[in-house]
Amino acid sequence: SGRVSFGLVGFRDRPQPGADVQYLTHVYQPLDEQADPNNFPAVLRGVQAAAEPTMGIAEDGLRGLLEAENLDWAPYSSRWIIYVSDASMRTPITDDKGNKHDVRSIASSLWESKKIALTTIYLNTPDAARSGDAGRAEAQFKTMTVGPKKSLPYLSIPDGDPASFGGAIDARTQ
Image 1 (cartoon, rainbow, N blue to C red):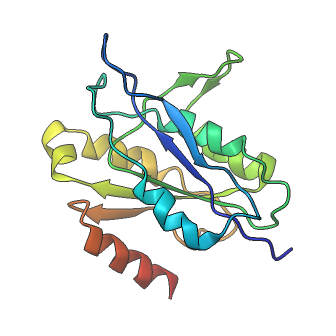
Image 2: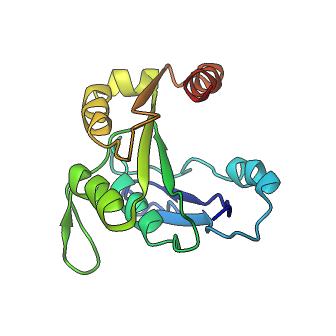
């Protein structure tokens, strides 16, 4: 079918004791074929970094992927998650039903069960390099890309630079 929709799921790490990070995962915009795609940039601008401290550099990205997998994908024949992060993922995790998940199991499940392609874009920031997280994040993200042709495989954006991000996406999609 020709239906198009953009959804957005945010994710964070667990808060430090006494801190309030507002959410671990949050659906900023569900998949909704009635939603105006021209409003999506405003939704993106509404995403803010946690103001309170979290447990560490790694984020709960696997829970974010599980949240995205649970959106209503049924009306769409083409399904694609673009995972963007500046930090590695906490792994493995246990979901609400007691099932354990790791990076490969979730990526495989997306494609095998719902035919959702997954591309990873890593904002490789100076903070990640200083913290020692960059190597771990890259190793995880390189194993995550799944889909029919891997048309936009893992992509690392040096210094997490917004200009480089746009240029890299443009170069890969033309």
